Amino acid sequence: MISIKEFSQIEYLRPDVDALQNQVGAQISRLESASCYAEARAAYLAAENAMAEAFTMGTVAQIRNSLDTGDAFYDGEMKYINLVKARLIPLEKRGADALLSSRFRPDFEAEFGKQLLSGFELKRKLQSEAVVPDRITEGELSMKYKKTAAGCKTEFMGETCNFYGLMKHMESTDREIRKSAFLEWAKLYEGISDKLDDLYDKLISVRIDMAEKLGLSDYIEMAYLSMGRTDYTRDDTAAFRSQVRAVIVPAVAKLRKLQAKRLGVDSLKYYDETLLFPEGNADPIGGKDVLVPAASGMYHEMSAETGDFFDFMCKYELFDLDTRPGKQLGGYCTALYKYKAPYIFSNFNGTAADVGVLTHEAGHAFAGYTAFRNQPTVRYLASTNEINEIESMAMEHFAYPWIGDFFGTEKAEKARYSHLFNALAVIPYVAAVDEFQHLVFEHPEMSAAGRRDTWKRLENEYMPWRDYDGVAFLEGGGFWMQKLHIFLHPFYYIDYALAQTCAFELYGMMKKNRQAAWASYMKLCRSGGSLSYFELLDFAGLRNPFLEGSVENAVSHVIEELSVSQRDLEV
Ligand code: ZN
Image 1 (tube, helix red, strand yellow):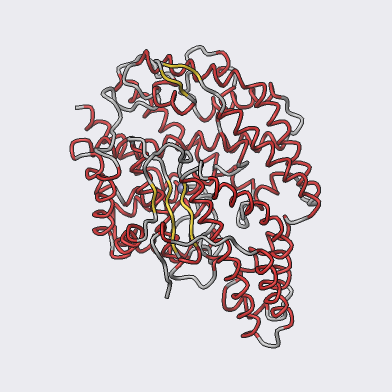
Image 2 (cartoon, protein in one colour):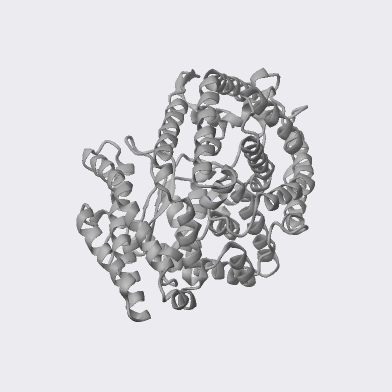
């Protein structure tokens, strides 16, 4: 039985780290000296539970801090929590060692599966006092990157715009406005390109140093381990990218030509790419007050499980969707372990992205909510990104029959076309970003100019339609710099393409037999992270995306659908 209150009523108590250390330390000692499995198991779960309770309070503080960044109390709490987190690392390491060397290890494995142990083993490979200073340096460089990018502003059409503000104008139905917004955007990036090159040089070098200190073959190995990639290697990723080049690149190239025709332009420039229809992209029919009831109606009709989930989210105030002064930018989905509750944070802006929050982020939240109720350990509440993103992306496809409730019946087809098109069209770019990072870390001697040449070559291969309309900085390979993940979340990006491939496969199933697709989806959600990536795919009856032919199998019906509905939309 979980006792949960509305989020605003949850009382925040600062985690008492000394008491936590004593409590968890005592349970670890009990685990170390246990005379039977029942005792070892109870000690392990008690330690896990105490940590989860403390982390829940940390999450409450983090959410409230993001809701009002000006609130001095939670700002102070976040500083405190970040400080004490580091103090808990030795304790976590001791706990992992105790479990891995326990004489009851086979019993743990028999009850919880090998995933629990392999997760701890993987973590142990990356834990070393030797890399602590490097991690601090990496964190400082990441902060500098964020500040450099956030500080970029320019005047455009009488308003102060950052990159995000300019990108909104790049969706304008007026081509001249799109073009001038794009030129300003490119100028802003060029203006900070020296700084970004310098920061990236430093990030590369500190990352390579860490991998060396950990005794790993290179940073690529370290990045794969950090993301829990136990089932595949860089060679598999390379094979997946070649399927993308063979199947998706030519299809998107054709669809881009049709887009140019629809927009009535001779050749599609970069600033035309986000505008899919000459009269403008489809926007939702209202804000939170319209979209949340629409989502509630949809989730109740979709299944009993999703209906219960959405009621739970509403009843306990587990979203904050509106934009307000002082609220942190962007959006996220997090979890309050103690209450078995997901939490969704976003800033609605009146575009299709708002619907994305109520489908994609809600898909993550639903998966977490379901795993919470089916898994015995907090370590199994979520899987790795390749699976977590299938759960969120497939929910976007499951939502198609209700798309008119969000965009209006007359715009439903356009909204659906745009969603499907964008889901496919982004994959070559994702693959290019992935190959770029592999090449950078395989050739640490590569100069800033070399990186631009590399990006330019990849752009030709993966996005042959790309046309920067004569802007020398971008035509020379400067575009990679606008990808935040390359700086802050190295190698975390191909996950989206892998997951979208599986989500497309599920979408294909939906068209033929929605019930079967839903059953497969629920298998994934219930399993959380209790199995490895490939095991989960197998359990849910999904094809391994690395195997030759999988990409074609997953996307051919999508390409077909986009070509047909493009013809319908033309009339
Ligand atoms: Zn996601």
